[in-house]
Amino acid sequence: MSVPLLELEGLALVGLVKEVSLEDCGAGPTRRSRVRVVLYDGRSLESECMLYERAVRSYLVLAKYTTLGRSIRRSLVEEEILGKVRFDVE
Image 1 (cartoon, rainbow, N blue to C red):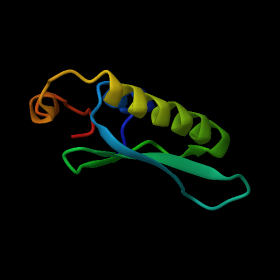
Image 2 (image 1 turned 180 degrees about the vertical axis):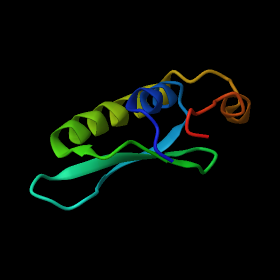
Image 3 (image 1 turned 90 degrees about the horizontal axis):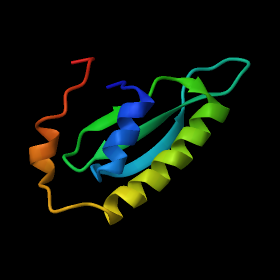
């Protein structure tokens, strides 16, 4: 499911992202990529396809936010938080 990068960053900061990856998408004269995250509940979310340079920067930010989110995570239950998360694309 494609969601805005800002929402992916928010999920990472509150400690709900399990892993982050960068993958290529589309073929053409310019390299394009997307960021994919896997949440602790098993759902996989991805950003829109964008220029590789922008995707790499976003990937690095998300990787750092994922680490930070894990370290500042409170005693909140992930299911409780994920149950309240709504995406515009649903």
